Amino acid sequence: MADTVVAQPQIDPHTEQFLEQSAGSKFDFQSVSTKAAGDEKLKTAINNAVLRQYTGRQLQLLQLPDSDALRTLAGQIKQHALDYLDYYLDQLKSNVERNGGKVHFARDGAEAKRIILDIARNAGCSRCIKSKTMVSEEINLAHALEIAGMDVVETDLGEFIVQISHDRPSHLVAPIVHKDRASIAKLFSEYFGTPYNDDPSALTMQARAYLRDKFRSSDFGMTGGNFLVAETGQLCCVENEGNQRQSITTPRVLVSLVGIEKVVPRMVDLAVMLKLLARSATGQPITIYTNIFGGPRAAGEKDGPEEFHLVLIDNGRSEILASEEYRETLRCIRCGACLNACPIYRKIGGHAYGSVYPGPIGALITPLFQGLANFKDLPQASSLCGACYEACPVKINIPRHLVNLRRDIQKTHLNSGAERMIYRLWANAMKSPLLYNLIGTFQKWDLRRRARKTGGWVTEMPSVAAGWTQIRDMPAPAAKTFHQMWKKR
Ligand code: SF4
Image (cartoon, rainbow, N blue to C red; front, side, top):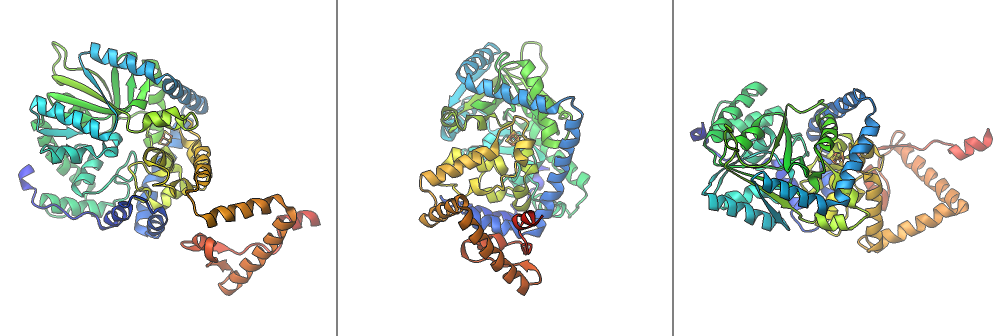
Protein backbone atom coordinates (compact mmCIF):
# COMPACT_ATOMS: atom_id res chain seq x y z
CA MET A 1 0.00 0.00 0.00
CA ALA A 2 2.86 2.38 0.79
CA ASP A 3 4.00 2.17 -2.84
CA THR A 4 0.66 3.46 -4.12
CA VAL A 5 1.22 6.94 -2.64
CA VAL A 6 1.53 9.22 -5.65
CA ALA A 7 0.91 12.80 -4.73
CA GLN A 8 1.22 15.25 -1.88
CA PRO A 9 -2.07 17.17 -1.81
CA GLN A 10 -2.14 20.90 -1.33
CA ILE A 11 -2.91 22.19 2.12
CA ASP A 12 -6.60 22.78 2.77
CA PRO A 13 -7.27 26.35 1.47
CA HIS A 14 -9.21 27.35 4.59
CA THR A 15 -6.45 26.20 6.88
CA GLU A 16 -3.81 27.80 4.70
CA GLN A 17 -5.40 31.21 5.13
CA PHE A 18 -5.71 30.77 8.87
CA LEU A 19 -2.10 29.67 9.18
CA GLU A 20 -0.81 32.55 7.07
CA GLN A 21 -2.65 35.03 9.20
CA SER A 22 -1.46 33.49 12.43
CA ALA A 23 2.16 33.27 11.29
CA GLY A 24 2.92 36.87 12.33
CA SER A 25 4.43 37.33 15.77
CA LYS A 26 1.39 39.28 16.92
CA PHE A 27 -1.66 37.13 16.25
CA ASP A 28 -4.62 39.02 14.79
CA PHE A 29 -7.51 37.15 16.37
CA GLN A 30 -10.00 39.81 15.30
CA SER A 31 -9.71 39.32 11.55
CA VAL A 32 -9.19 35.54 11.64
CA SER A 33 -12.17 34.92 13.91
CA THR A 34 -14.43 37.25 11.91
CA LYS A 35 -13.63 35.31 8.77
CA ALA A 36 -14.17 31.96 10.50
CA ALA A 37 -17.50 33.08 11.95
CA GLY A 38 -18.73 33.84 8.43
CA ASP A 39 -17.86 30.35 7.18
CA GLU A 40 -21.16 28.42 7.26
CA LYS A 41 -19.59 25.10 6.20
CA LEU A 42 -17.09 25.28 9.05
CA LYS A 43 -19.78 26.18 11.58
CA THR A 44 -22.01 23.29 10.52
CA ALA A 45 -19.15 20.74 10.67
CA ILE A 46 -18.07 21.94 14.11
CA ASN A 47 -21.56 22.20 15.55
CA ASN A 48 -22.47 18.70 14.40
CA ALA A 49 -19.39 17.18 15.97
CA VAL A 50 -19.10 19.06 19.24
CA LEU A 51 -22.80 19.12 20.13
CA ARG A 52 -22.83 15.32 20.02
CA GLN A 53 -19.93 15.21 22.48
CA TYR A 54 -21.47 17.97 24.59
CA THR A 55 -24.79 16.20 25.07
CA GLY A 56 -23.01 12.84 25.46
CA ARG A 57 -21.04 14.30 28.36
CA GLN A 58 -24.15 15.57 30.08
CA LEU A 59 -25.88 12.18 29.82
CA GLN A 60 -22.80 10.31 31.05
CA LEU A 61 -22.37 12.55 34.10
CA LEU A 62 -25.94 11.73 35.12
CA GLN A 63 -24.83 8.10 35.51
CA LEU A 64 -22.51 9.09 38.37
CA PRO A 65 -23.92 9.32 41.89
CA ASP A 66 -22.49 12.83 42.48
CA SER A 67 -20.55 14.12 39.51
CA ASP A 68 -20.03 17.55 41.03
CA ALA A 69 -18.32 16.08 44.11
CA LEU A 70 -16.18 13.90 41.81
CA ARG A 71 -15.12 16.98 39.81
CA THR A 72 -14.19 18.74 43.05
CA LEU A 73 -12.12 15.74 44.10
CA ALA A 74 -10.40 15.53 40.70
CA GLY A 75 -9.53 19.24 40.91
CA GLN A 76 -8.13 18.76 44.42
CA ILE A 77 -6.00 15.79 43.33
CA LYS A 78 -4.49 17.72 40.44
CA GLN A 79 -3.99 20.84 42.57
CA HIS A 80 -2.24 18.82 45.30
CA ALA A 81 0.05 17.21 42.72
CA LEU A 82 0.91 20.67 41.32
CA ASP A 83 1.51 22.18 44.77
CA TYR A 84 4.03 19.39 45.52
CA LEU A 85 5.21 18.79 41.97
CA ASP A 86 8.94 18.62 42.82
CA TYR A 87 8.27 15.80 45.29
CA TYR A 88 6.07 13.81 42.89
CA LEU A 89 8.41 14.26 39.92
CA ASP A 90 11.26 12.87 42.05
CA GLN A 91 9.14 9.91 43.08
CA LEU A 92 8.06 9.32 39.49
CA LYS A 93 11.65 9.41 38.23
CA SER A 94 12.87 6.89 40.83
CA ASN A 95 10.03 4.52 40.03
CA VAL A 96 10.41 4.74 36.23
CA GLU A 97 14.13 3.96 36.68
CA ARG A 98 13.31 1.10 39.01
CA ASN A 99 11.07 -0.26 36.21
CA GLY A 100 14.07 -0.15 33.85
CA GLY A 101 13.19 3.07 31.97
CA LYS A 102 15.21 6.25 31.54
CA VAL A 103 13.91 9.72 32.48
CA HIS A 104 15.00 12.91 30.72
CA PHE A 105 14.02 16.46 31.68
CA ALA A 106 13.68 19.01 28.86
CA ARG A 107 13.51 22.74 29.59
CA ASP A 108 11.85 23.58 26.27
CA GLY A 109 10.84 22.25 22.86
CA ALA A 110 14.32 22.52 21.36
CA GLU A 111 15.86 20.47 24.17
CA ALA A 112 13.08 17.86 24.01
CA LYS A 113 13.59 17.45 20.25
CA ARG A 114 17.36 17.15 20.73
CA ILE A 115 16.92 14.45 23.40
CA ILE A 116 14.44 12.45 21.30
CA LEU A 117 16.59 12.64 18.17
CA ASP A 118 19.66 11.53 20.16
CA ILE A 119 17.74 8.53 21.48
CA ALA A 120 16.70 7.59 17.94
CA ARG A 121 20.23 8.03 16.54
CA ASN A 122 21.91 6.08 19.34
CA ALA A 123 19.48 3.20 18.85
CA GLY A 124 19.80 3.33 15.04
CA CYS A 125 16.07 3.94 14.54
CA SER A 126 14.60 5.61 11.45
CA ARG A 127 10.93 4.58 11.18
CA CYS A 128 8.67 6.21 13.75
CA ILE A 129 5.04 5.46 14.53
CA LYS A 130 3.53 8.17 16.62
CA SER A 131 0.28 8.27 18.53
CA LYS A 132 -1.74 11.40 19.24
CA THR A 133 -0.20 13.81 21.73
CA MET A 134 -0.93 17.51 22.14
CA VAL A 135 2.48 18.24 23.64
CA SER A 136 4.24 16.99 20.50
CA GLU A 137 2.02 19.39 18.50
CA GLU A 138 3.06 22.10 20.94
CA ILE A 139 6.72 21.68 19.97
CA ASN A 140 6.09 20.55 16.37
CA LEU A 141 7.94 17.31 17.01
CA ALA A 142 6.88 15.29 13.96
CA HIS A 143 8.28 17.95 11.66
CA ALA A 144 11.62 17.96 13.52
CA LEU A 145 11.89 14.17 13.24
CA GLU A 146 11.11 14.34 9.51
CA ILE A 147 13.74 17.02 8.94
CA ALA A 148 16.24 14.75 10.69
CA GLY A 149 15.47 12.08 8.08
CA MET A 150 13.04 9.86 9.97
CA ASP A 151 9.94 8.38 8.38
CA VAL A 152 7.20 9.57 10.76
CA VAL A 153 3.60 8.40 10.62
CA GLU A 154 0.76 9.71 12.77
CA THR A 155 -1.24 6.61 13.68
CA ASP A 156 -4.39 8.19 15.14
CA LEU A 157 -6.82 8.39 12.22
CA GLY A 158 -7.63 12.07 12.78
CA GLU A 159 -3.98 12.99 13.19
CA PHE A 160 -3.09 10.92 10.12
CA ILE A 161 -5.58 12.97 8.09
CA VAL A 162 -4.09 16.16 9.56
CA GLN A 163 -0.60 14.95 8.62
CA ILE A 164 -1.32 14.02 5.01
CA SER A 165 -3.28 17.23 4.38
CA HIS A 166 -0.52 19.35 6.01
CA ASP A 167 -3.22 20.76 8.25
CA ARG A 168 -3.35 21.57 11.96
CA PRO A 169 -5.62 19.96 14.58
CA SER A 170 -8.59 22.17 15.45
CA HIS A 171 -9.79 20.39 18.59
CA LEU A 172 -7.97 18.81 21.54
CA VAL A 173 -9.70 15.44 21.17
CA ALA A 174 -11.15 15.48 17.64
CA PRO A 175 -8.41 17.01 15.48
CA ILE A 176 -10.39 17.01 12.22
CA VAL A 177 -13.62 18.38 13.58
CA HIS A 178 -13.44 21.10 10.90
CA LYS A 179 -13.38 18.65 7.97
CA ASP A 180 -16.36 16.97 6.36
CA ARG A 181 -16.58 13.50 4.86
CA ALA A 182 -16.33 14.70 1.24
CA SER A 183 -13.07 16.58 1.82
CA ILE A 184 -11.54 13.52 3.53
CA ALA A 185 -12.64 11.25 0.65
CA LYS A 186 -11.06 13.65 -1.85
CA LEU A 187 -7.87 13.80 0.20
CA PHE A 188 -7.58 9.97 0.36
CA SER A 189 -8.26 9.67 -3.35
CA GLU A 190 -5.42 12.10 -4.12
CA TYR A 191 -2.99 10.73 -1.52
CA PHE A 192 -3.42 7.05 -2.28
CA GLY A 193 -4.19 7.49 -5.97
CA THR A 194 -7.43 5.51 -5.64
CA PRO A 195 -10.99 6.27 -6.91
CA TYR A 196 -13.09 8.68 -4.83
CA ASN A 197 -15.14 6.82 -2.20
CA ASP A 198 -16.79 8.67 0.67
CA ASP A 199 -18.05 5.62 2.56
CA PRO A 200 -16.65 6.07 6.13
CA SER A 201 -15.87 2.36 6.60
CA ALA A 202 -14.06 2.19 3.26
CA LEU A 203 -11.99 5.25 4.21
CA THR A 204 -11.17 3.76 7.61
CA MET A 205 -10.15 0.43 6.06
CA GLN A 206 -7.92 2.21 3.57
CA ALA A 207 -6.09 4.06 6.37
CA ARG A 208 -5.99 0.87 8.45
CA ALA A 209 -4.28 -1.14 5.72
CA TYR A 210 -1.72 1.62 5.17
CA LEU A 211 -1.01 1.99 8.89
CA ARG A 212 -0.75 -1.77 9.53
CA ASP A 213 2.16 -1.86 7.15
CA LYS A 214 3.83 0.98 9.05
CA PHE A 215 3.24 -0.70 12.42
CA ARG A 216 4.95 -3.86 11.20
CA SER A 217 8.07 -2.10 9.94
CA SER A 218 8.59 0.59 12.59
CA ASP A 219 11.48 0.60 15.06
CA PHE A 220 10.66 3.75 17.04
CA GLY A 221 7.40 4.42 18.91
CA MET A 222 6.28 7.78 20.27
CA THR A 223 3.42 8.48 22.66
CA GLY A 224 2.28 11.24 24.94
CA GLY A 225 0.66 10.51 28.28
CA ASN A 226 -2.68 11.45 29.80
CA PHE A 227 -1.42 10.82 33.33
CA LEU A 228 1.83 9.92 35.07
CA VAL A 229 1.43 7.88 38.25
CA ALA A 230 4.22 8.85 40.65
CA GLU A 231 3.64 5.94 43.05
CA THR A 232 4.27 3.25 40.40
CA GLY A 233 6.34 5.11 37.78
CA GLN A 234 3.78 4.30 35.08
CA LEU A 235 2.03 6.25 32.34
CA CYS A 236 -1.61 6.06 31.47
CA CYS A 237 -2.67 6.74 27.86
CA VAL A 238 -6.25 6.44 26.72
CA GLU A 239 -7.50 5.93 23.17
CA ASN A 240 -10.30 4.43 21.11
CA GLU A 241 -8.55 3.04 18.04
CA GLY A 242 -5.86 0.68 19.35
CA ASN A 243 -3.16 2.45 17.37
CA GLN A 244 -1.50 3.69 20.52
CA ARG A 245 -1.25 0.17 21.92
CA GLN A 246 0.55 -0.78 18.70
CA SER A 247 2.96 2.14 19.16
CA ILE A 248 3.67 1.01 22.72
CA THR A 249 4.13 -2.69 22.07
CA THR A 250 5.58 -3.10 18.55
CA PRO A 251 8.73 -0.94 18.11
CA ARG A 252 11.96 -1.85 19.86
CA VAL A 253 12.43 1.70 21.23
CA LEU A 254 9.61 3.63 22.91
CA VAL A 255 9.71 7.31 23.87
CA SER A 256 6.91 9.05 25.74
CA LEU A 257 6.91 12.84 25.72
CA VAL A 258 4.78 14.26 28.53
CA GLY A 259 4.32 17.66 30.19
CA ILE A 260 5.52 17.80 33.80
CA GLU A 261 2.05 18.80 34.99
CA LYS A 262 0.52 15.41 34.12
CA VAL A 263 1.52 13.76 37.41
CA VAL A 264 -1.01 12.25 39.79
CA PRO A 265 0.24 10.83 43.09
CA ARG A 266 -1.34 7.35 43.25
CA MET A 267 -3.19 4.68 41.27
CA VAL A 268 -6.37 5.41 43.22
CA ASP A 269 -6.14 9.01 42.02
CA LEU A 270 -5.90 7.75 38.45
CA ALA A 271 -9.20 5.93 38.97
CA VAL A 272 -10.90 9.26 39.77
CA MET A 273 -9.43 10.87 36.67
CA LEU A 274 -10.44 8.00 34.40
CA LYS A 275 -14.03 8.20 35.63
CA LEU A 276 -14.16 11.76 34.36
CA LEU A 277 -11.84 11.93 31.34
CA ALA A 278 -13.77 9.92 28.74
CA ARG A 279 -17.14 11.10 30.03
CA SER A 280 -16.06 14.71 29.65
CA ALA A 281 -14.23 14.24 26.34
CA THR A 282 -16.41 12.01 24.19
CA GLY A 283 -19.40 11.11 26.34
CA GLN A 284 -18.17 7.52 26.85
CA PRO A 285 -18.10 5.85 30.29
CA ILE A 286 -14.49 4.89 29.53
CA THR A 287 -12.31 4.79 26.42
CA ILE A 288 -11.99 1.53 24.48
CA TYR A 289 -8.31 1.16 25.42
CA THR A 290 -6.70 2.30 28.66
CA ASN A 291 -2.97 1.64 28.40
CA ILE A 292 -0.89 1.63 31.59
CA PHE A 293 2.80 1.04 31.02
CA GLY A 294 6.28 2.21 32.00
CA GLY A 295 9.52 0.45 31.34
CA PRO A 296 10.97 -1.93 28.79
CA ARG A 297 9.81 -5.48 28.16
CA ALA A 298 10.54 -7.68 31.17
CA ALA A 299 12.00 -11.19 30.91
CA GLY A 300 9.30 -13.60 29.73
CA GLU A 301 7.03 -10.88 28.33
CA LYS A 302 5.90 -11.37 24.73
CA ASP A 303 5.78 -7.76 23.62
CA GLY A 304 6.92 -4.29 24.59
CA PRO A 305 10.01 -2.22 23.77
CA GLU A 306 13.61 -3.11 24.50
CA GLU A 307 14.25 0.51 25.56
CA PHE A 308 11.86 2.91 27.25
CA HIS A 309 12.46 6.65 27.69
CA LEU A 310 10.23 9.18 29.42
CA VAL A 311 10.90 12.77 28.34
CA LEU A 312 9.36 15.25 30.77
CA ILE A 313 8.99 18.67 29.24
CA ASP A 314 8.66 22.02 31.00
CA ASN A 315 8.31 24.51 28.11
CA GLY A 316 6.93 27.37 30.21
CA ARG A 317 5.03 25.27 32.75
CA SER A 318 7.31 26.14 35.71
CA GLU A 319 6.66 29.82 35.14
CA ILE A 320 2.92 29.24 35.34
CA LEU A 321 3.50 27.03 38.37
CA ALA A 322 5.44 29.83 40.06
CA SER A 323 2.55 32.25 39.63
CA GLU A 324 0.09 31.16 42.29
CA GLU A 325 -2.67 33.06 40.53
CA TYR A 326 -2.55 30.99 37.33
CA ARG A 327 -1.19 27.68 38.70
CA GLU A 328 -4.66 26.16 38.63
CA THR A 329 -4.62 26.27 34.81
CA LEU A 330 -2.06 23.42 34.84
CA ARG A 331 -4.73 21.06 36.18
CA CYS A 332 -6.04 20.71 32.62
CA ILE A 333 -6.40 17.09 31.45
CA ARG A 334 -7.04 18.18 27.81
CA CYS A 335 -10.48 16.59 27.64
CA GLY A 336 -11.88 19.29 25.33
CA ALA A 337 -15.17 19.61 27.26
CA CYS A 338 -14.72 23.37 27.57
CA LEU A 339 -14.37 23.64 23.76
CA ASN A 340 -17.58 21.69 23.20
CA ALA A 341 -19.44 23.89 25.68
CA CYS A 342 -18.11 27.21 24.38
CA PRO A 343 -20.44 29.31 22.19
CA ILE A 344 -17.42 31.13 20.73
CA TYR A 345 -15.52 27.96 19.79
CA ARG A 346 -18.64 26.57 18.11
CA LYS A 347 -18.82 29.65 15.90
CA ILE A 348 -15.17 29.97 14.88
CA GLY A 349 -13.52 26.55 15.30
CA GLY A 350 -10.03 25.84 16.54
CA HIS A 351 -7.70 27.35 13.94
CA ALA A 352 -8.85 30.88 14.71
CA TYR A 353 -7.11 30.68 18.10
CA GLY A 354 -3.74 30.57 16.32
CA SER A 355 -2.28 27.91 18.62
CA VAL A 356 -2.43 24.15 19.17
CA TYR A 357 -4.59 24.79 22.23
CA PRO A 358 -7.91 26.23 21.06
CA GLY A 359 -11.15 27.10 22.84
CA PRO A 360 -11.49 28.56 26.33
CA ILE A 361 -8.46 26.72 27.75
CA GLY A 362 -6.42 27.82 24.70
CA ALA A 363 -7.52 31.43 25.17
CA LEU A 364 -6.12 31.10 28.66
CA ILE A 365 -2.92 29.06 28.36
CA THR A 366 -1.70 30.29 24.97
CA PRO A 367 -1.04 33.82 26.31
CA LEU A 368 0.51 32.27 29.45
CA PHE A 369 2.79 29.97 27.41
CA GLN A 370 3.61 32.30 24.53
CA GLY A 371 3.34 35.77 26.01
CA LEU A 372 0.33 37.97 26.62
CA ALA A 373 1.71 40.61 24.23
CA ASN A 374 1.62 38.11 21.34
CA PHE A 375 -1.91 36.89 22.06
CA LYS A 376 -3.58 39.81 23.80
CA ASP A 377 -6.84 39.33 21.87
CA LEU A 378 -7.40 35.77 23.09
CA PRO A 379 -8.58 36.59 26.64
CA GLN A 380 -11.32 38.66 24.99
CA ALA A 381 -12.50 35.60 23.01
CA SER A 382 -15.08 34.72 25.63
CA SER A 383 -18.56 35.83 26.54
CA LEU A 384 -17.70 34.89 30.16
CA CYS A 385 -20.92 32.85 30.24
CA GLY A 386 -19.24 30.27 32.45
CA ALA A 387 -20.14 27.22 30.31
CA CYS A 388 -16.47 26.19 30.26
CA TYR A 389 -16.22 26.25 34.06
CA GLU A 390 -19.41 24.19 34.34
CA ALA A 391 -17.99 21.60 31.93
CA CYS A 392 -14.47 21.32 33.30
CA PRO A 393 -13.87 17.99 35.08
CA VAL A 394 -11.09 19.49 37.24
CA LYS A 395 -12.95 22.75 37.92
CA ILE A 396 -10.53 25.26 36.43
CA ASN A 397 -12.22 28.62 36.82
CA ILE A 398 -11.51 29.68 33.23
CA PRO A 399 -13.76 32.79 33.20
CA ARG A 400 -12.10 34.17 36.33
CA HIS A 401 -8.63 33.67 34.87
CA LEU A 402 -9.68 35.29 31.57
CA VAL A 403 -10.88 38.35 33.49
CA ASN A 404 -7.56 38.42 35.33
CA LEU A 405 -5.69 38.30 32.02
CA ARG A 406 -7.82 41.23 30.78
CA ARG A 407 -6.81 43.06 33.94
CA ASP A 408 -3.13 42.29 33.19
CA ILE A 409 -3.57 43.68 29.66
CA GLN A 410 -5.01 46.90 31.08
CA LYS A 411 -2.32 47.16 33.78
CA THR A 412 0.59 46.60 31.42
CA HIS A 413 -0.87 48.95 28.78
CA LEU A 414 -1.00 46.25 26.09
CA ASN A 415 -4.27 47.72 24.84
CA SER A 416 -4.54 51.10 23.13
CA GLY A 417 -4.79 54.43 24.97
CA ALA A 418 -8.22 55.00 23.37
CA GLU A 419 -9.51 51.67 24.70
CA ARG A 420 -8.23 52.45 28.21
CA MET A 421 -9.93 55.86 28.06
CA ILE A 422 -13.24 54.30 26.98
CA TYR A 423 -13.11 51.85 29.89
CA ARG A 424 -12.35 54.69 32.32
CA LEU A 425 -15.31 56.70 31.03
CA TRP A 426 -17.50 53.63 31.18
CA ALA A 427 -16.45 52.91 34.78
CA ASN A 428 -17.26 56.52 35.75
CA ALA A 429 -20.64 56.34 34.03
CA MET A 430 -21.48 53.09 35.84
CA LYS A 431 -20.75 54.80 39.16
CA SER A 432 -23.08 57.78 38.47
CA PRO A 433 -26.85 57.01 38.17
CA LEU A 434 -27.41 60.37 36.43
CA LEU A 435 -24.76 59.76 33.78
CA TYR A 436 -25.81 56.12 33.41
CA ASN A 437 -29.44 57.09 32.72
CA LEU A 438 -28.43 59.87 30.35
CA ILE A 439 -26.20 57.59 28.26
CA GLY A 440 -28.78 54.78 28.38
CA THR A 441 -31.54 57.07 27.10
CA PHE A 442 -29.39 58.37 24.27
CA GLN A 443 -28.24 54.85 23.34
CA LYS A 444 -31.83 53.54 23.28
CA TRP A 445 -32.97 56.44 21.11
CA ASP A 446 -30.07 55.90 18.69
CA LEU A 447 -30.54 52.10 18.41
CA ARG A 448 -34.32 52.37 17.89
CA ARG A 449 -33.72 55.05 15.24
CA ARG A 450 -31.28 52.75 13.39
CA ALA A 451 -33.62 49.72 13.69
CA ARG A 452 -36.58 51.64 12.26
CA LYS A 453 -34.68 52.01 8.97
CA THR A 454 -33.84 48.28 8.74
CA GLY A 455 -37.00 46.39 9.62
CA GLY A 456 -36.72 46.34 13.42
CA TRP A 457 -33.11 45.07 13.61
CA VAL A 458 -29.92 47.02 14.24
CA THR A 459 -27.61 46.00 11.44
CA GLU A 460 -24.87 48.58 11.85
CA MET A 461 -23.31 50.10 14.96
CA PRO A 462 -21.05 53.15 15.01
CA SER A 463 -17.17 53.13 15.29
CA VAL A 464 -15.90 51.23 18.38
CA ALA A 465 -19.12 49.20 18.64
CA ALA A 466 -19.09 48.21 14.94
CA GLY A 467 -17.74 44.73 15.75
CA TRP A 468 -20.99 43.75 17.47
CA THR A 469 -22.93 43.87 14.20
CA GLN A 470 -20.16 42.66 11.90
CA ILE A 471 -21.55 39.13 11.67
CA ARG A 472 -24.96 39.37 13.35
CA ASP A 473 -27.88 41.77 13.77
CA MET A 474 -29.25 42.95 17.06
CA PRO A 475 -32.95 43.39 17.94
CA ALA A 476 -34.08 46.97 18.67
CA PRO A 477 -34.24 47.79 22.39
CA ALA A 478 -37.70 47.82 24.00
CA ALA A 479 -39.52 51.17 24.10
CA LYS A 480 -39.46 51.17 27.90
CA THR A 481 -36.52 50.08 30.02
CA PHE A 482 -36.89 47.60 32.88
CA HIS A 483 -36.30 50.45 35.35
CA GLN A 484 -39.16 52.48 33.83
CA MET A 485 -41.55 49.49 33.93
CA TRP A 486 -40.55 48.69 37.51
CA LYS A 487 -41.23 52.26 38.64
CA LYS A 488 -44.64 52.30 36.96
CA ARG A 489 -45.77 49.13 38.73
S1 SF4 B 1 -9.81 23.26 30.87
FE1 SF4 B 1 -11.03 21.63 31.80
S2 SF4 B 1 -12.65 21.26 30.27
FE2 SF4 B 1 -11.06 22.39 29.19
S3 SF4 B 1 -9.76 20.82 28.28
FE3 SF4 B 1 -8.86 21.32 30.27
S4 SF4 B 1 -9.73 19.83 31.69
FE4 SF4 B 1 -11.01 19.79 29.86
